[in-house]
Image 1 (spheres, rainbow, N blue to C red):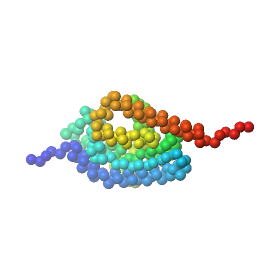
Image 2 (cartoon, helix red, strand yellow):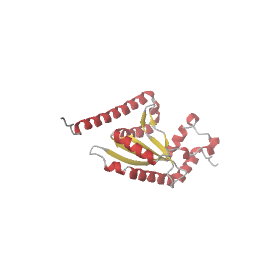
Image 3 (cartoon, one colour):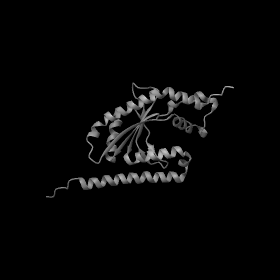
Image 4 (spheres, one colour):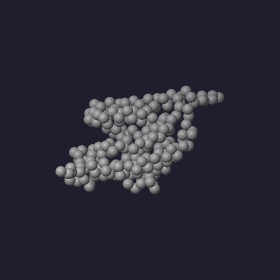
Length: 213
């Protein structure tokens, strides 16, 4: 007896068909962002940082993300042709980690000018607080099927997300608890305040004193 194909089977097949394009989009987007931000990178002060990282969404993660967008968070076996991973804006992504926040604004404005046609969809937490700018669109000449996405993120927040995402992906149910959402928001707020405090301290004690008449 032949096993009936499920929507997940079809999406896995689609993913690996798209994978070469996903890879090209990630590499192209990373290369473009590195190139455009090069002047800022060369002007960084000793304590400032700018790191550009690309990543490709894994197959099962992509399918789970698409499933979460469906009513009841399930796929309808009778509607297999209605599902496609090409609706996801983050199959190929780049994260730009920046410190301090003043540099983040500079990077965001520069890239926004270069990717002016891309759609803005900022990262917002469960309580409506904007955490980081995020944009998605197509890389011209690379793919018309796979969207690319980039984020410009405060350095400490981005590093926290690496750890938090890994843990929450393995224990996904934990992330839905209201208490855990509050803990995560508290950490994100504390990291933002810490970065602002560091920047303020550095500006206060490294700027040359004003001359008095």
